[in-house]
Image 1 (tube, rainbow, N blue to C red):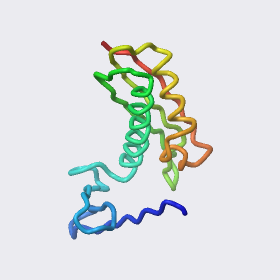
Image 2: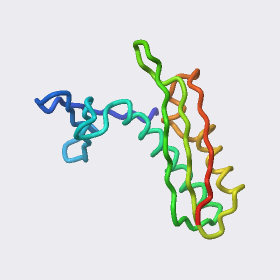
Image 3: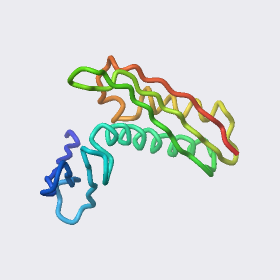
Image 4: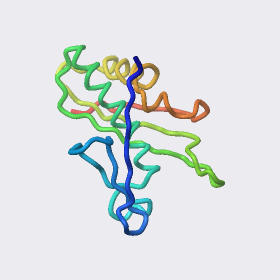
Length: 139
């Protein structure tokens, strides 16, 4: 049986601000501000969804490799078209990873597996979006 998720987004009643999350009472919500003043807007939220999905995979994969993470962050840069719809045409992920037992090939394998196989958010993007990444190994 397919895994079905139902999300709900409600206008807050002011400006272009919305609050949403799973359509279940008591579940956490997040604020989205299309003007980007009080919270990330929809397009930044899309980048954050891809980043959080991928880093979740990387944490899991590196854990299976017996790497004890000390740091994991990702900076995501999206390039958008000038014309409508102003969708992303390219997204670049810059991972910074540090941990005990971490070697470059561990990080490269974990990031590649996430980007190419496991990350559902990235797999949901249009197939013509150019996806690239690089990795910095920290201390």
